[in-house]
Length: 393
Image 1 (cartoon, one colour):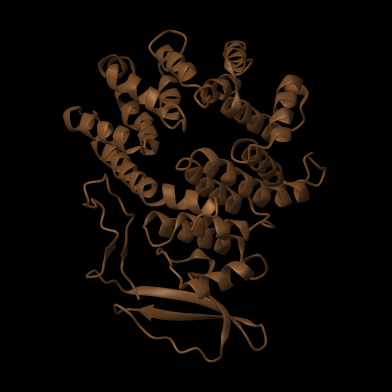
Image 2 (image 1 turned 30 degrees about the vertical axis):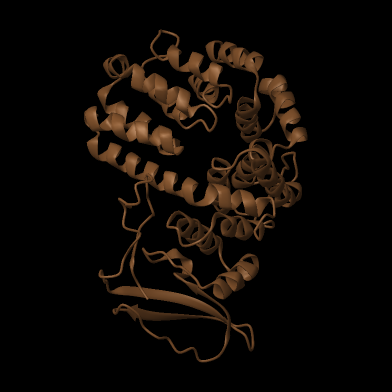
């Protein structure tokens, strides 16, 4: 069957500004799906035309699994019944290509945002990908886990971090903590991605300690991906002394890339006082006007101190919009998408009812819509996910 896909968004007034489903709409959709025979294990492909609200497809023989959108060739999402989803997930590593595994994870996360699946469903799917070896698939999984990390607190968050460690450790250990001569560029990038996820989302103490060691070694560390990951780990878990050290490294950076790396990471420190100090720097000569939008966007996205950055932006709006290039305003406001605590989100919506964004009204509208989606996700899933994580059904 087919329907128009949309994310569920709700700021708490009971009216969704984004239609999650529109069953009146209908398209002619060419589908390619694959299936594995339950009899002989042979994988076959079929093409059908979905030109009605729903159609019945007769299979020649029973199938172990069915995957819609083979090799990701179609511009549509797929939603599976629980038993079909479970079968696909169970055989994903052996039977699906990397792009198909990516599509499966991406569609399942989209179903969470649409309100069709629970957040814990996504976590369970992710845990079935412990042996995953593809960089892009891991990046999609970690993006979903990062979103879940934003909506749980306290014991629930600690339980999530434990689950994340159990999920990521096997792939990280298989790849190895040190670069190997046979590593491809994607292997090296994946090692950095997994290392960072273990340190930030997994709260792995050993990884956090190693990140400090890598930064102390500095330029002689052989792997740039681990250096970049270490910067982000130290920032996400850092203290005021780490913050001051990052400022020193930013100012003494030998290259513009190194300067931007440490400048951007300053926005990831969890201490609200440090973020308040940082955002004030964007109105001084300590931060170049062309770099300030990057810093503000990342500060607004800060899980623990984004509200501090928003207070600064809303209070200093005139000064900010005067100093920064007009075409950069809408871009840095992308950070408001993560301000999903309902009180802050309402303040953001109210603010932009009376403040225009030059050269960026459509982009701003997209940011606000995505903010509504994230508010709805938090309202639906925060308590429910916490209960599931703590086994309180």
